Structure formats: C-alpha cells, structure tokens
Image (cartoon, rainbow, N blue to C red; front, side):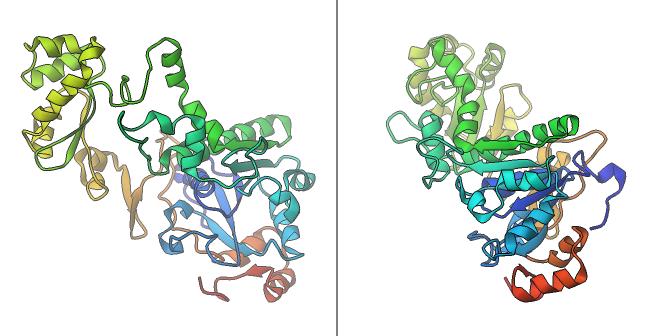
Length: 395
C-alpha cells in the first residue's frame, strides 16, 4: 500500500482496523475510518460479497480498504484472524450476539492475543436485552427507539427515512465515534475494551432534543410540532413544476424576511402565525398555494440570496453540480465513480482521495505477508481454501 504524503494522510493515519465483512452500518463505519486515513483491512467471506446485492466494484461503502478472503468456518480460519488481530488497533464485527464467540474470534480471545485491541461490535438491538438475538433491520430499530414515530403526516403512517437514520446515523457513526474514543483511551491506559454499539441506543440518543421539548410541553402528536412539518415555516412545498423547495424560517428575523420575500409582510394572519400554533395548519395550506405559483428554479432565483433559510430539494443527479457543492467539492469523481467526499474537513491532516472499493480477496497475499505469515504458510492457507485470492476465484 503506497504511503500518502504527510499532508494527505488524514488524522487516523497509523491506526490499523480489521473489519469482519458485513452489510450496512459495519461497512459504513469502516469507510469513515478509512476516509480519515486508517489502514482498514476487510475480512471478506468465501461465499461472495457478504450477502450484499451491490456489485463489489460499485460498493462505495467499501472504498479505501484492502481485502482478504478468509473462511472463518474452517478449523484454521479463526487462527488466521487472531494473528491478524495481533497487529491491529481495532476489530469491527457485526454478528448477532454470541456468533463471534462460537467462531473463536470473540473479544476475550482476541484480547488475549492483543490486550490493546479495541473490539467494536455493531448490532441493531445491542449485545443483551430481550430482543438481542432477534433479526431486525433499520426500520425496526428506529421504530423501537421512538424516531420512526416522529416522522410523517398526521393523517397517515410514519414516513420511512430510507435507512440513513438508523443504520448510518444511529449505528455506524456511533460505532466510529466509540472506537476512536476507545483507541484514545487505550493509548493512555495500554488496555483495549469492547465497544457495544446498538442502532437502537444510537438512534434514541439522536432524539434527545425531542425529549427535552416534550418535557417542556412543546412537543405533541406527529406533524403538529416545530421541526416535524407541523409549522408552516419549517417544511417542504411543491412547486409549479412538481419539484420541491425547503423552508426553515424558525427564528423570528428569518420568518419576517420570508414574509417580506413572499409579499406577505402585511398579512396579519401570517404575522401572528409565527407564535400562534392554532394558525399553523391553515397557513401551511396558504403557503402551499403560494409555492405552486412558480417553478422550483424560479423560487431558487428569488430566495437563494435572502436569509429565509431556503434550499431547493435536489435529486441525486443534481447534487454534484449545484454551485455550493461544486465550490466545496462536496462530491468527488474518484476512480470513475461519483461519490460524496470524505467529511469533515481538516486544516492540516487532510484526508486523501478515497481509494476504490475493496474487491474481495484482491489483497490476500499482501495482507498475510504484512502480518508476518511466511510464504510457505501463505501458500498452505491458499491451497487448503482457508484464504482465497481474487486471482484464484472470480467474484
């Protein structure tokens, strides 16, 4: 692996992560760490791409990694992973509770070989509790955390927010945060630890502000509150061309600016409507009529330069060419694939361009050699099928 220039290494340069392949939040956590300069080695499965429907060449969640294909069900498979863990700072796994232990690669076994190892565990329900052994997906976890019930219209079912809120927001980001915290602590104490990241726990934490508002009596049923579309000045409106704009004029000065921009500054009902919640449903209906008078791009031309907390709702074909995103280089065309650039930004330890998605087994020999396996050991593991090389098997 070519060592990047010091100014393009990223703040996690020198941190080695062993990621046992999974789907969803585990890979996204590995991507975040790799984006920041960590050396992430992905341990893929012999039976393909870990059940992922996305082709490996297009799986951007696996960007910036090296990959070794290892059969953990083979009698020698666990020993290979344990040797790899000896040189790692972090191990990530997303099995159901108890599976890693049954495979012989649980945290106690790994930390016997490497006491400084941070062992990151990603699950939906958590490592314990009545539901811990049950199957689930993002929608189930955010439902139990109370987040799903916050979203959607008052007269319909909750709106499903893709899988961004649970898998990636409540899951992967909290796992990444947790393992970086634990790595910092291990450097001071010399001892690793287990990080139990549950999507339910993380998503529940994301709702903290709502609990505070509710305790104060400022949060009621769905779609009648300040930040859930209940307020006419915080929501999404359809335009004349069927596209949409977003308005977030929460503070009084932004609200006054919005009314002025819409020629509603002298409308008594709108003036009173910022504070009078009883008017919100009617004023939302009135604004819906106003915004249907022009196209999305016409509203963008009118409102973009005013402090009304406005943005057009863009689709995925538009985001990379928007002037703001283009100026910030929020998206990058790396290795022939348009994708979001690493975030956040750093003034000194700047992350480099993300590497391509890891192809399963593409780095098997290199990874084993770097971990201290002799050429004879490597050839033996390849010949017995404990480790697979991409040149041996097509994926």
